[in-house]
Amino acid sequence: GENVEQHPSTLSVQEGDSAVIKCTYSDSASNYFPWYKQELGKRPQLIIDIRSNVGEKKDQRIAVTLNKTAKHFSLHITETQPEDSAVYFCAASRSGGSNYKLTFGKGTLLTVNP
Amino acid sequence: DAMVIQNPRYQVTQFGKPVTLSCSQTLNHNVMYWYQQKSSQAPKLLFHYYDKDFNNEADTPDNFQSRRPNTSFCFLDIRSPGLGDAAMYLCATSRAVLGGGRTGELFFGEGSRLTVL
Image (tube, rainbow over all chains, first blue to last red; front, side, top):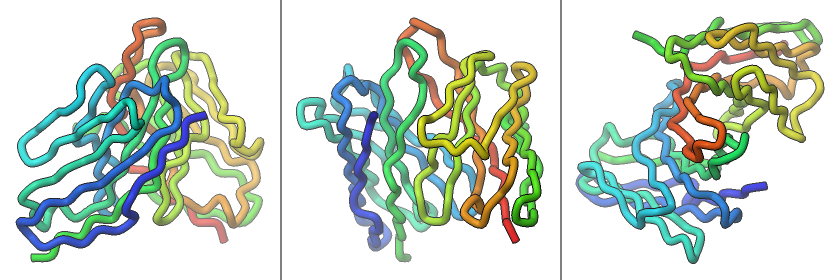
């Protein structure tokens, strides 16, 4: 099955700095890579996703890059704000057939210091 | 306008006493999932339904069962909770088309936090 490794497990940055979280996956057939943000005590929520037919996707201050050859993808947050503080999970899955399940990384606790 | 609703939000049970957690959705999504999330860990998939087709993860203990009586509702039954089953249980939904090839966004409920005494 799929295995997703995520680094770092914790990340502390100053407000305004950039944050980068990296993930690798094992299943070369995986083609969908979402990122979820989970604030303390709340549900995970999708913040951005990328499919294997593109290499980069941006949405305001957040961006995701994908390197299919190396089987890794990264989340970039620019101009961080205190409200970006949360646990971020990467995930991977392959679509088609009846395989609709995501495999999550272990998460990164991001702390943005004012 | 909650779209995935879980009940109860907090459940306290005794060791070995059966528990049922419920999930309802207003999204009309055909796929429903149950994840277990322990403190400071990633969500771990227990099982999922594609319509009425049940898909169990190989490492999900037999102690965990699920029912999906209709599109909108899904239940997680823990037959004999142990101390190690204390966790947040997250229900999620997505829309997928068999053979359509595209995995959709997962919408999570707020979770049910289970405490086992």
